[in-house]
Image 1 (cartoon, one colour):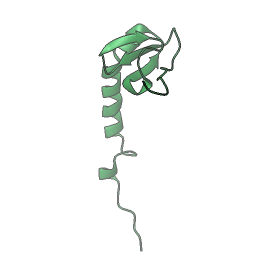
Image 2 (cartoon, rainbow, N blue to C red):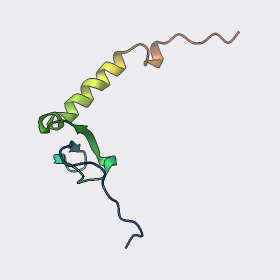
Image 3 (tube, rainbow, N blue to C red):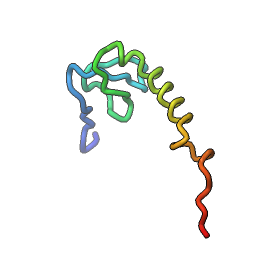
Amino acid sequence: MPLFRHQPTGKPGEWYFCLKHHKVEEGPECAAKDRLGPYATRTEAEHALETAAERNREWRADPAWNDEERPQDDKS
């Protein structure tokens, strides 16, 4: 038996998408490392993977965050 039990963090009324079980959860069910959220509504949590994918696309297209498109610093 482990010395410390993992206590999930979160509150009832907060919605999460569990990456481990691929389901929507309310409040603290699974470990925080396995969840996306919190979201204000169940519907937002249901679309968590789509939201994350859209944000990733936006991030990749942002020149301020795209190292490949940044000019190299001149060290002279």
